Image (cartoon, rainbow, N blue to C red):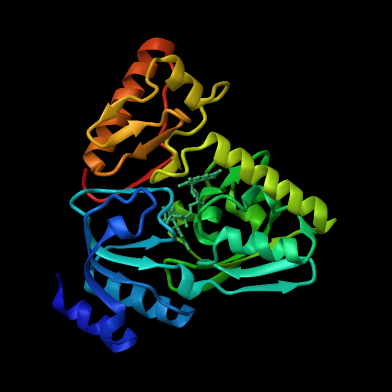
Length: 303
Ligand code: FAD
């Protein structure tokens, strides 16, 4: 690792907040991933700006991590800097019918605030285990709702180091996509715009959706949620099930028996197990149904 960059980070964050060879299995919901050279969790925008400026000067790659709930990290880890925007960058404030939150705020926390304030529109997101930043990037959605429906504006750090506020309409949010990654933006904060509603109804909708998740999804195993995107006109899970792949296993990775759309880590899965299993599933579904399954999960590192 570039010694200079570590020292420069420590001058900003102190020695304790710069982690070396940090196992990424600790920071992904898949519980998979080798070591990252350096791992930092900045607490404010100024720190984020400084860390990124250093990465650029030192020509070291960096990756922005939220809660790692849509991510498969290579067994070899990541040769660069992981900048995690999570709990230490997770302030949430209520302003009338709007919730203003930093990128690291968890969707569950935002949903709880909406419920307490009797604001409706965010019930769909309460059970998605990601940060606001990750959800904006992915246009996360569930049960008929998506971020695009409730997002008013997003403040980003541009690749040129400027802080810019963009309206949701400028982000080209589509099915599990937006322009944020492509443009090299880092989400710093966002404003969610909701409507006044009935608190009991909001509570019971959230409970209903939580019940649906726990009855249908393999929540007791590590995973990254839906492994593949929904192909137009089909459901990935059903195609996989109808291909006879329920419970199909490679090493410690398995097509969940409870929900075939999820690949789970049964305990000791490697990233290689997961990618091999995914390739098998893609090939077999293509052979049986002529449908191409595209990964929804993002990959990080060398595979
Ligand atoms: P990460 O996995 O950390 O990152 C995802 C991508 O976003 C990466 O490319 C990363 O670089 C980028 N990113 C993260 N933060 C920022 C930032 N601040 N600025 C710029 N880029 C950033 N998803 C759904 O849409 N609907 C669901 O119903 C759903 N259910 C799930 C259920 C389970 C059990 C699990 C494990 C996952 C589920 N997911 C679901 C997937 C995942 O939770 C979402 O995609 C979530 O939005 C990812 O957020 P994250 O903070 O974990 O992002």
